[in-house]
Image: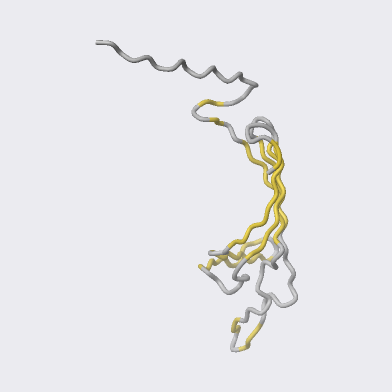
Length: 130
């Protein structure tokens, strides 16, 4: 991270991820033909490696770019279709790049929408005399 945490900053890093649910939808002429999902599927690589770069602006808006170094599909995956072993993802190279935009609307319990001065800290409490 570079910059002040409560103002603008730049952040970059590396992520190691475990894909735990695979969902696939098949379309023919823009009509959905099939849909399924599998938990901890062999259709994807077992782990993903990703690099990210982001910018956080003064009022909590965040812009992040993330690129997955790992191919999304497992090109060695085989399935049996009509008694024949096929590799549906053989030769398919699918590295993902995505851009996300986020907004941090709240700081503590207050909505932040303009440059506000932080209130002075309360005076030290005084002891009660009985």
